[in-house]
Image (cartoon, rainbow, N blue to C red; front, side, top):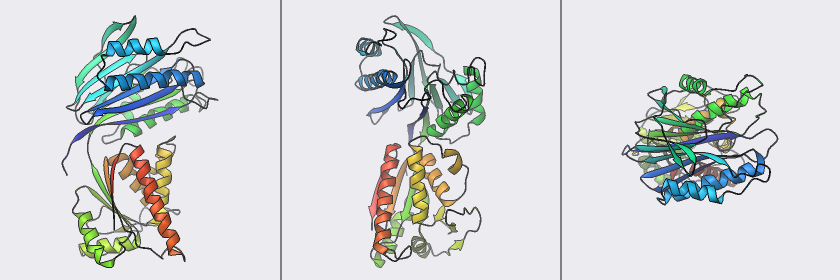
Length: 390
């Protein structure tokens, strides 16, 4: 597999206590295969009005910048277009823009959001901003060439207000946030994981009743990484070797799901299946070991849990601290697919398996539905997927 680099974007928000809608909004667009634009907007106040302001701002900036409109004109358009708040009589939304041209030249624009910073070589470092004035607004601008594993951390002001009058006298200051992120960073962490760690901490400082919408968005420069998943045996026994050969000829990590599937993999490799009694979870069936395979798990029950984790990952990501630090089969698959992989190839066998229940057709339909749902969720995460059926 050819190793390339890309800009991985991850973000997480918690709403102002009592509000159904978040006043912060994130937009990500890819104008072409060599560019990615990330926008985090924070609308004035909270609730519906703030949501409208931030949504309009994020959408307009991302679309106009993607169409190569000058930034000055983008800002003027946003100022003219935003609706006027009936209470404050102003149209107001702060924003941060991170534009990555694959090469990897990064441009950052920041208007009234907490100042973005960089995690470089495991250290939190400030960006070298220049302040310019556009339409009477002071905009921070920075340009730099990113290195592999650089992470640009962006925030709404709910982060620096976290804990104000609750657990902290004056909120959480930017130097403290930078120190916290540096302390909790480890190489290889996904953009979503970094955002989750910061927002979770802010939520705790608020006493889990946030006094402001709080969002963290991270843009991480990373290498592409492929993960291959084989799930279920082929319809025709003679296709076992074809499926296994195509699966193992791919570069990247190899995951085998299901007892019968494991037998197909072991036969092709000429290796034994060894039960793994370590890292067992009472709710998830135990794993196995096959020399030459990175991960061997049970099939249907394990994949059900993976899909549950994926749905949660795209929502509150509240389960992150469970699966990310667990060593059962579902947790390890979730880590490989959500955190490590950028592109995932599924090799799905369509044979009806009677091992789960009396009506093998039911388990077959459930397996196919689970596979389709997981692929859908992975695509929503921004992963590239490919599926081959046998």
